[in-house]
Image: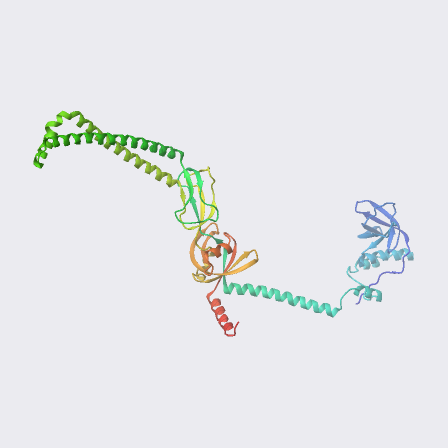
Length: 462
């Protein structure tokens, strides 16, 4: 059975007088007396007319209700039905024709109108409708060709994406959580002290053993100054005691010389005279000998005290020098954490030195991939720079099992990659510290194929 649907009596545009119910969105119930299949006059004067409502059609004691959209025509009170479905048009037309004919619509007609498919459209179009429908559209063959081209492109993109992902998994080992790391060595204060002087600046090259920051301890400085003053005092007293001892020794020697000169003895007699002087004549010079002996004891005592003080001064100097922070390796100053006059606690950071070693890339790999990675594997490293991404070549330097919380909290393989083709200065310039990178280690078979391909191209001059 074929069903043909056309607009009911589309040439009728005059209004009929029959009550229609209208429930506005606000809930207000109004009655429309004059209406047609195109629309109706709104019964009240209002500047704001409704754009939608529930239309009620009375039929044998019941109301057939359905929502309608309304459209105002110019500045009049006439509201047109907008976008009625086939079922709504049929139901409204049955009521409209019954009023025009003066006959009550049958139940069968109403049921038939309610059963009309909503999306049913006329099977035939007028020339005007065909012109409007095709106006501004491309030819059907062109649209079909464009659709086929679009689907082909979409299929190619999907195939390329999936294929590239599969190929990448087969040919490479992706190293996760990769980043650039510089060999940074923090320098800490060995003891508590105040910053006396900062001797370096940022990015300054330093050698191992160079003093970076001088620290001072007020108590140690005071003790050193006290020892120095005591040394000066002892040195003065020692000089006086030595002069006194030398004077007394010269007097004793003078007396001996006078005795010998007066007697003019021979050499054997001189020995007897000196012995007699020390034994027989010494009692005539008891005070002189006693003073000389006391002077010698004083010189020895002061000398011992001076040596002790000098040892103490050296110990205090060494303790003061031990406070200074010195470079533990050759490198460049990467950070200075203190300023002059600041109190540095024991174990606190004072400066950071970047060792004179090339920067490397470090990443993490799941332990299940331990057999797929080994030292010497070629690695492609993608680094973001001011001019855009840049790919560098590196090689796996070390593979160790463990946990590095700064890279990954999970146990796995920690992979270090060195850039053999770059110098220390070039790595500092091209690889910022802690910069994130993408790393893929090439499997041995793909590296061999690429090498063979390069050799093949080189034979033809490429």
